[in-house]
Length: 182
Image 1 (cartoon, rainbow, N blue to C red):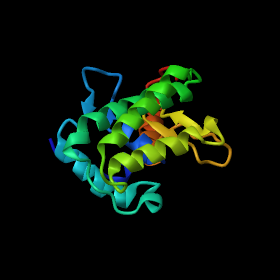
Image 2 (image 1 turned 180 degrees about the horizontal axis):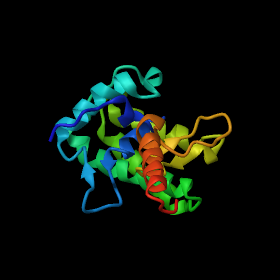
Image 3 (image 1 turned 180 degrees about the vertical axis):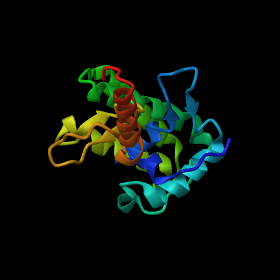
Image 4 (image 1 turned 30 degrees about the horizontal axis):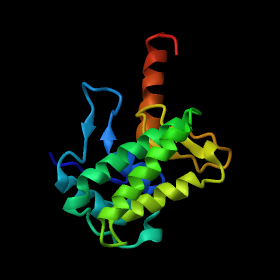
């Protein structure tokens, strides 16, 4: 299946979070979609990340994921999600960090080039681990994606105001119009 890699798909604010967010509706098994199930979509993601990722100035042109590293890259994506989701929920556990670092090490041993998506995603995850204000890591109240809240007062609730914020506000308006409680 072909997907459109739009700026909204890079609303996480960090390459590692954008990679984790490549699973749509992660916690709804009936509707969940893994955008990386088709390896060609990983290549499309690489091209789009060079244009839309908030960290693109840090990594420059990206090389695609090597075929021998693809499975390890997907395991690393899941470790990213588990660790940072637990962090955002205030449920951080040492085993999540250990798994993330272990998966990062396994992935790095497989890649021959420092300019690949794999390496830059590891660098992004390490930058997030060292985040001076971990409370800026949040989960979108609408879609469940991970994102960095870079607002001045740390009050962002949605990954992307133009998409999730509008949908949430429209739903609230619709409920009010029907007289339903919020």
